[in-house]
Each structure stands twice: as structure tokens, then as C-alpha cells.
Image 1 (cartoon, rainbow, N blue to C red):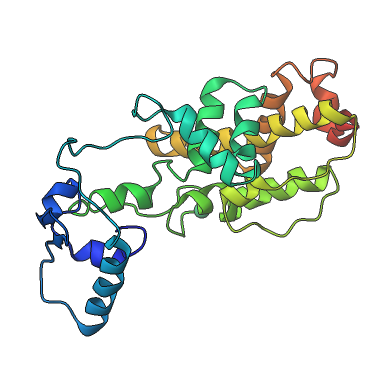
Image 2 (image 1 turned 30 degrees about the horizontal axis):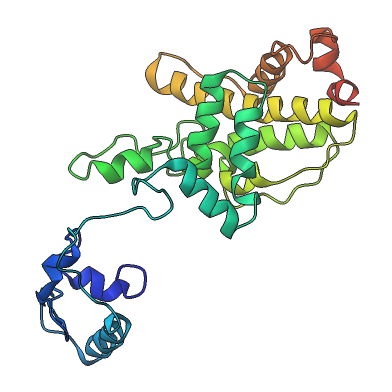
Length: 267
Ligand SMILES: [Zn+2]
């Protein structure tokens, strides 16, 4: 009902109920009670007619208990494995490629977890905290990096004047011309062609992207929770490169080389 007739579903008082709660008379023809909380409009009545048409072939068993069964498993219980197989069989693998690349990156687990939260839009930025606490007024209700716009995930990590200057620095180092993506999910899903030594370059690139997100988040938190004036975008850019350089994949290069000529490291 929720999938095919979302409007009717929103009007029902029985959203979480079993099928038996909707049935007045189980013998054929079945009488249904959808528990609508008000009288229906003409358009909604037309939808009910369509719904009844869908239900016309339904027969109710008097001998079997009314319970939920996950048909993809023999034992009838839900499993993530079977659900994942179903999604993969109905879609392209690209739906998962972003998350696979996040977890496969050679960065610390806490950083990968932050990236996973960002990709799912679940980081607790001011806008999300405010939405969950309607009686509390957040003060200040702006981004601590630029001190002007409302803080949201996409603003904080990409569109903020402070953050985007860092992305421009990173992309100019590797000679990529970029149209600012709509949000973090789009940014993380973008497959940039970074010229260099194949797989190794890809690994280094992932480290840098993770370093960028992580350092922006740390900078934001330090400014909010500590007495800290804040780093300039140049200082944070050096911190991003230093952070990436200690991940082990830059170990063949001295830090001064990384700071001086970053593209030489990627080549
Ligand atoms: Zn900002």
C-alpha cells in the first residue's frame, strides 16, 4: 500500500498492522477496512477502487498464522545477505561502488567511517541538529568556517568559501578542471582520471580526498569545541598533505617534496 498508493497509506491509521487487521470478513468476497482517518475525496476514492482491484485476487488462509515472511530465505527470516543479493540482481553494481571504494581506501577506520556518514548524509551538522531539536535554538546557527551561511553537510565540506578553496588547491595540483558538484555524494561518486602510476595513484588520490574531509571536520570541531582561532586555508592545505604523507603510501617521498611539488609525487 505504501509503495503503490502512498497517499492512501498516509491516511490509514493502521500503518504498522498485520493483514488480518484490515480484513472484516475473510471469506470470499473479502471486506476490507483500511482505517482511513477522514472521509475520502473523489480522487482518493478513485485510488481505493484501484487498490481493491489489486486486492481482488487475494485469498485469506484460515489455517496459517498471519505473520511476516522473508521469501528470499528458506527459514523466512530477513538477512542482509539475501537483501544485498536482491539489490545487486535488480541494479548495477555502481549503487555500491562508492561505499566499496570508501571502505577499501588505505586510511584509518575512523576516517572511513566519517566518509561513510558523509556519503549517507548523516553527519551531525547544525542543520540536522536543529531539525531534531525544534524547541532548542542553536546559536550561532552558521558555519564556523566562513561564519556566514547555514551549516549543512554539503556546505561545510564543499560549498563553503573556506572548503572550496582547498578543493581548488587539490585539483589545480593535478591539473583537473572541475565543476563544483551538487553535494558530497556526487563528489565522492565522481571518478576522476588522475594520470600517473595506475593503482598506486588511485590509492594516493583516495587518501588525499579522505584527508581533505577529515581535516575539514577536525578544523570545524576545534573551532567549535576548543579555544582555537582557526587555521588559514593555506595552513590546512599543508596539514592535508602532511596527513596524507604519513599514511604510508607517501613514505618514499620527503615531506618537503610533497609540499613543494605535489604532482611529482603522483606521477
Ligand atoms: Zn561556511
